[in-house]
Amino acid sequence: MPLVAGDVAAVLHLVRMHLGAGEALPTEAGDIVRQNEDLGRWVQSVRLGRDQLTTVQQWLCEHVKA
Image (cartoon, rainbow, N blue to C red; front, top):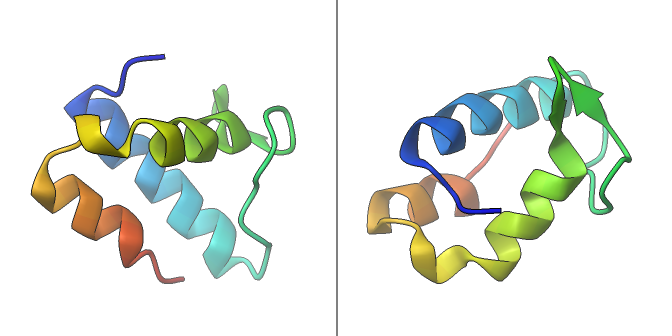
């Protein structure tokens, strides 16, 4: 799944909300789905496709805080 700039921002927001609710970071596809976005699949794709992200997107993903 290619990582699109808008997708990164939108799903990153959903992941931050998930973490802010005290939940763990999803690591497997299908673990958590929010607003029709598979957060576990997205986390996997970011880890595997990190080099496709811009420097700013990489920084944001590395510094996700609830």
